[in-house]
Length: 114
Image 1 (cartoon, rainbow, N blue to C red):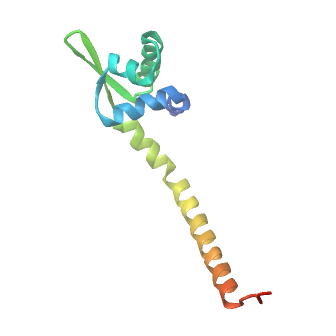
Image 2: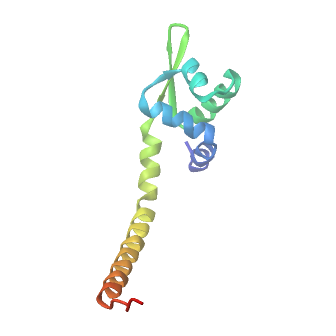
Image 3: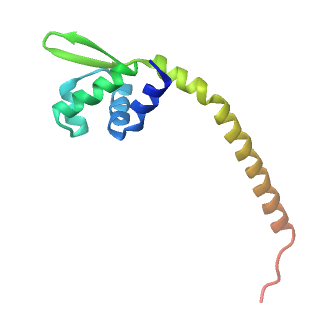
């Protein structure tokens, strides 16, 4: 799996929907087709992209192919995003503090009513 293939795989909304379905539980292709409202060939193409990116794995169950989410690339993505989450959290904390200060200032000086 390359970082580029992971980002490319997750860039498509249909593939993100499939990942969301597989987050709940492994599913056969037929269920994924039905849940996504796509054709079987289109769903298979999306599943191939997800498989090539390492996001899903497939196993044969009699005549069905069952797809499951592989959490490893998601964990790697989560680790990559961690510093950005920290940056956003610090920024949002500062914004919250500023809003609290503004709110405290506004309530300490009531305006005259007509």
